[in-house]
Length: 296
Image: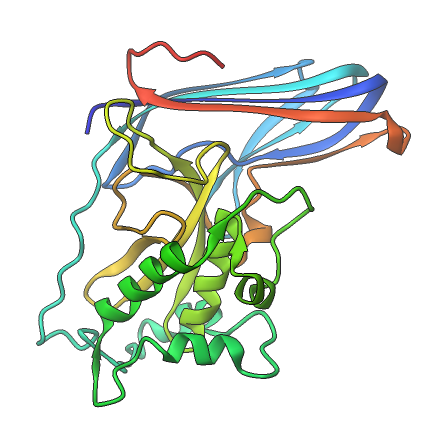
C-alpha cells in the first residue's frame, strides 16, 4: 500500500463568543510494526493557552488543550502522513491451542486479558449470548477463525448501517433488536458477543481508507471509523471490522484502543456558555495516497 495522508478537520460553531474548557484530542495514528507515522501536525484555532501530550492507560497518544480566549469558532485541523503496511491475515494451524474453540488463555496472559473478557453490558435474557453461540458448530469444536469471521460478515450482511446523532454508543441489545447502528455500535456489539464466549476483545478507533481507484462499498468512513481487535494465543491482537466485513488491518488505520468506546472518543471537550449558543459541528475527513490533493 502507498504512503497515506490523513486530513481531519473539525469545526465547532457558536452564536456568540464562548469560553472553552479542556479538550482531549485522540487523532494521532498509533505507531507499530504495521504502521509508522512519518509526519504530523495539529493546528488549533484559536491557539490554545497550553497543549500537552500524554499516553493514556492504554498507551494511546492524547493531546490535551486548554484555552484562555473566547471565540465563535473552535477549529481542530490534524494532518498525518503514515507508512501503512497491513499485516497478513493470521493463520493458525491445528497445532495451535486457539485453532479450535473453546480454548484457554495461558496463566501468563490471563491476568492482563480479564477486563477484555468480562462482559461490560447487561444481557438479562441471554440474547447476546444466544446470538454468539449461533456461530458454534453443535457437532463439535469450531475453528476459532470461523466464529470470528462469521460474526464479522454476519453483522455486515444482516445489520443496516445508519448514522445516529445521539450522544455516545448505543447498548448492544439495542443494536441487536434494531439490527442497525453506526460503526461504533457494531464494534461494541461484536466485542460483547466475543466476551460472552470468553474471547478477549477490545475497541479500536481510527480511520478507514477508501481507495479512489476502486470502491469496496465501504460505509462508516465519512468520519472516524471503529472496529474490533480480538486476542488469540500465537496470533496476538487481530483486527475485525464488522461494518465492512474486513478481516485484518487492510484499509484500517489504527489511532486508539480501549476496553470500552467511551475511553476512545476522538475529540471531546466543553464550552462555557448558554446551551443555545452551540450552532453545530462540521467534520471533514479525507484519507488519500500521499501526494494526492485533498480538499478539507
